Image 1 (cartoon, rainbow, N blue to C red):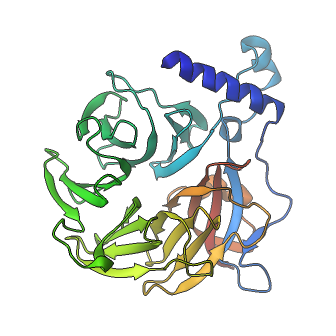
Image 2: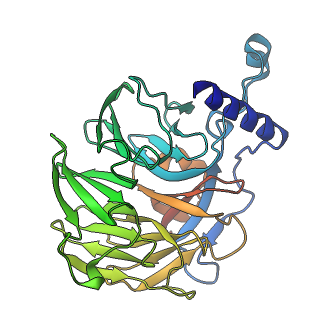
Length: 350
């Protein structure tokens, strides 16, 4: 497996060497919505390989060390930001890419302890630094400590088909395509507690058909992206249905293939649609506020994951228009295209 992984990296590095993507400040600022509307988001930059965060190797370093191979992000699905690091679940390399904004480094996560990643789709980071990785092919959620050592797993091999995982309030929430539910476990002993919706639920409105992504806000309310149901469902911390956002269709406010979901501190709900290749933003009542990108420039290509980050705005300061004030970052993973992790700034005009 390790040999295949290295061959994949070398092959991708060779291909990218022929058409390298290097990120530089864009020649002009691109806002959403477009003028003359009041801007709320600015496209800032993107990451597609190690060079986009580490930069090109200097001439002296090349002379001493030789050319350093470029490490690519090949097919990202989930993206998570924690303590200055961007974690990307790559479903082709079957690895987690770790982009450290402070150290300006790019590394492939190397599991230790005999647990091999087979198809990581998403991951969550607990308050103690443990990494929980949803591995659909293994049918488990794998847990690693801060040293990258395998700790344990939730579910026996093939028991689940996890697509996303989050840790909140002493509980672990797992989107499980196999049981068409969100399974909730105790974070300490991993005992199964209950499912959302409950197995006894008879109301069709409360059920989920393809729970692919999950977000839990500061109040403990749970947002589940139901790809098969063409909507996002909002539950309270006990699993009671509170609201449904969107429905099937091809108009703004509707969904064709909803995937990643995230909620900001004001309750705005961001939903990625892989088919429309955009992100739609709703208010707390489910009213559509806007969608982006709304133009061909810096488009998303089969987007999947999304993350909101309040902590690392300073790293992207050089890309922010001087007349625009960024409140937080929005990172979106595209499975294809030249921009794998696109970074937007949400804010307002000064």
